[in-house]
Length: 94
Image (cartoon, rainbow, N blue to C red; front, side):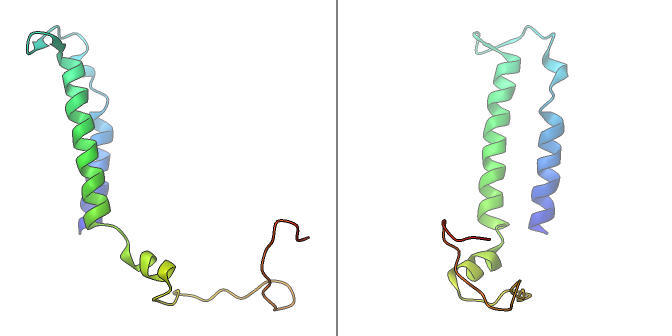
């Protein structure tokens, strides 16, 4: 549910990023800031909040557990070649 919300909100923000409705508006916010610039400031804050929400609530914790060694991967890939796994080093030949 939370991941779907993040994806939907990201799509909405992508659409709202193209703010063609403020292009011809000469309104000043607080008397000095053009409305388009104020809109993009608010948009940046909204994008930052969405990123925080995504990383805090919708982060795939199973990947973190796998990387830490606490869980087994869903499918164990078979080693290529003669069946022996070998460690890669920068000078090893292919």
